[in-house]
Picture: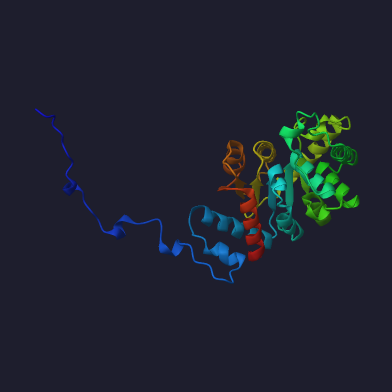
Length: 312
């Protein structure tokens, strides 16, 4: 005897009208075809009002609104942002007063310094390491380590010392430097260093005490910038897997302890992957609202910067 097989009878279900089911996606949210005379703002507004496209436009609107209202907009960035050649699209946002403070790590500062002085950066590690020359660029080490000493001795911090050195030293390509632009615009830029992570730490000119003091001064300046955040502020984070998310969380914790918690700002993470620390320490734990935009920096950041300028 064959085994018994019960089969569900579809007549038992209760169909309802489409209007009762309800849909999340509507044609009003669809993308629009572009015309030949399309502007960047037209392009962005033509994107679907859904998912990442919707979030990108929300971020652009929030940054533009913060800039119009003179509310702080912070940009935290890692080395990849600099190596991707994105300084030219970010510098106008510094000069126009959109970005009110910047923070980065030692690697990004080194890349920015090399670009400003030599017009190039990012050596071939697999090729140079076996030759014993990886990280051995004399001029880079001497210049960056001198800036650390001056920043510590004069009490101005690491970031300000790097920017000042590039401007006063008339670096040939300083127009492509985020540090030079920040110095000229009077916008704070801080460098958060972990000793031993950067190529300049391998050189005799490196002074651990000076580097530590210069970056500590920058950390305290960074905490002050976080304290200024309002409910209308935006914190943009791009390309730092560990250091900046950790520094950011500690800054917020210090302010919480001091009874000076910042406003419930919008935090945005722009990166190629969704990392643990940026997600937890930037988007979820400290902020009132978080948006994750996942994709290549070399596409996301120019779109974001162009959109902000268009809407201003």
